[in-house]
Image (cartoon, rainbow, N blue to C red; front, side, top):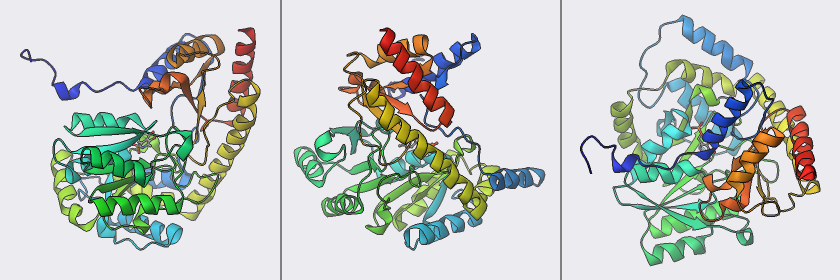
Length: 388
Ligand SMILES: Cc1ncc(COP(=O)(O)O)c(C=O)c1O
């Protein structure tokens, strides 16, 4: 490598969603109205008790906190597991992180050595494979299909592991971009096959709370070896607060504590104090109202997108995305998405972000915005497609 060149490990793929976001912002700055369905973030603000707690925190003294996070928040999260899932979690096993994104780097560093192979489903969230690669780990993409409702099965893991040993498996349920959820039984069987084969199971539960079909299960109910990652970003409407958490197997608590101490000392104290108020009953009542508006958006898209020609949609058990085939209109979803932004004024994310081989036939719509925007977006796209 020439002197002063960037490291090879920094050559991660860009996140196309963020590039579409930049294009959408540019169009808006030029005076065009753009309906924003490209990024996965709630249109609604954080609950009022969270904002009030942040105000209170900022007027007091702020400093470093314990690297694993403030005790009241770790306790509140443990209570959340008892209340929501009837699962008892020792608060000492909970680490507060900078969003779930912060949790992943700690989890990967604590659980795996350089060169370890970690299975991830495709289509899937791109940062998994990019971060694994940057840390010197190998992301092993396993393609899922409609046949297994776009989920990994124990048989797939056994097969890939037999070909060349894996060290871990990472799944999200509900998933981004597919929206599919693992039933409690399928999550249990995945976690059991991982335990049997000695593979670390990482369960990304960031879309819990946003489930429209079935009931979400936590991997904590099935194994003490699993790492469970979660966040205040999605259900709790707190993307910009950069706060999340991880529940760790006991043996990984100290390693994660040491890594956190050295990587960033502590998380932002304002966000930690504010996040305690996310579990306030008034916050939860508000957040359920926000979720109800997503349910209306979801129903609208599931009915209207097929009517304008998107007749191949993946199931949307949870999260706030519709992953739709665009093959009827184009074999190049990057170009299709770009034209849809310029000509119809609707921003969405092309599939290659989530699936490098098959993604050119797909596009992801986020329905976390307002009901009026979702209705208008479908009208605009329908009119644009009819004009041809
Ligand atoms: C599946 C999944 N995991 C993790 C994240 C990261 O979110 P955050 O770092 O805001 O918690 C996202 C964000 O879109 C996601 O879709």
